Amino acid sequence: MKTSVTETPFEGNESIKRTLWPVDKRHRFYPTFLPGCEMAFEQAVFRFMEEFCKPYNGGYWDFYILSNGGFYLCLNQKGDMRVENHENYFFSDMSADAASIGVNLFALGQMAHQFERQHINDAYYHLLDYAKIHPEADKILRFID
Image (cartoon, rainbow, N blue to C red):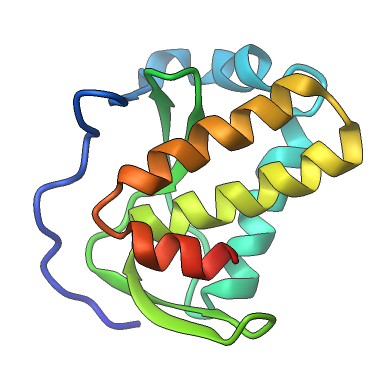
């Protein structure tokens, strides 16, 4: 796994801001955003991280909420990680934050298809809007394409 010094974390801009979900309220995160689908989402995020980021073998995840109503889980890791999507020939180093956004989008997309619930579909598009303003937007969008 390649590591490098990560610049200041991206907290959003004037249109969409992210906020770290309080650790003492983590037990309320999934029921708040994914009622009835909690474990399916978490398992999908972890599975996609393992699939696309081969050096990944677990870690601590932060939970973020977005001011537009979105949310995502973010691997708490410094430095870049190698991300490979063989389906679309994407190979690049990305921050753990950018890679996490990508795998969350994959998980939400899968769940939107599987569960056919509007709030999951909405969550996908809220996170996609955030991905589009992220400093690594180009990489994230190529990764999920």
